[in-house]
Length: 378
Image (cartoon, rainbow, N blue to C red; front, side):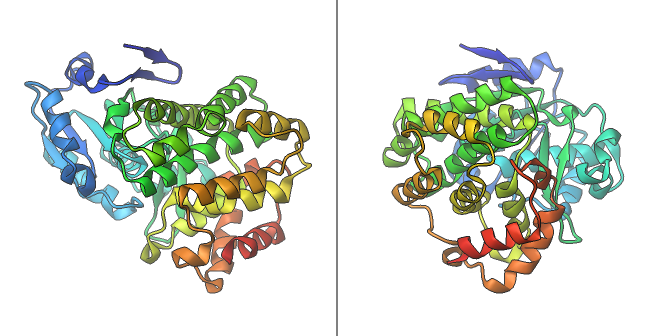
């Protein structure tokens, strides 16, 4: 079974969860705290993971993770973690479960409040070693199982990014079998999150050729070789699921280089708690507009991206993503998912303050985000 060692140790293959018991013992975890969500529990995946632990008994199982993790949930679960006298965490699910697990461990082990550790205000330097964290993704999108950070919506309304090498899970167990049968809509939305990671990581101006190469390979698997379309069309296509989980993993490896305006806007829109907007869907809607908006700012990178996507030289990448979204059943515009013109000013304000704002292929000002919002709205 492949064991990949880049930013962390990743056990990657069909049936990889069989290595969970051994992994827990390797870290000396005898009382793991499980973080997951209601859908994972209802689908029976939680039971599979508990069975894979063998004689190791969970100290506590929290299955109430919300779609967009909040500061309140982090505070609640940190208290539960300490009360259970847990000595490590298994995060099972999509990006929300993994991000909540990271926030929970940060508060449980470091104290204070989440705002103290926000990357944009220099909080990264306050983060040190956390208790062992094993991440088991059940979607192929966020790549949080290998990411240096997490996202959390604070009680002050800001959706903050947290970044530190200490936030990378100690081991990722990537088992594509856990994604078999995932609904088409969720497969599409999470898959477009991975695609956006790969594209924005390549376009951001920070110099990191190895990360760009990894991002291009992920994009090739997901789009150029058609794994995302195949996974949406047939939820039990095992090879497509393998390739999409790899594309997700590679997207997160690549975005150690940074992200850009799509994520700045998606983070800003995602803070609207009452609308419950899916991050991957937001990325998919914003992405084609941003690609058209910055075309010409990084011409050589655009050509490499076109090649990875299987497009002809000079093809309109925005049109290609729009066509891909349509084929996947992604909502056409922001209005289709409940966003209104009244939301625009706040989204633009928060996008300008988001950490990803610094990663655009060319400098962005307020008007750039206003244009992108207007184009994506209807």
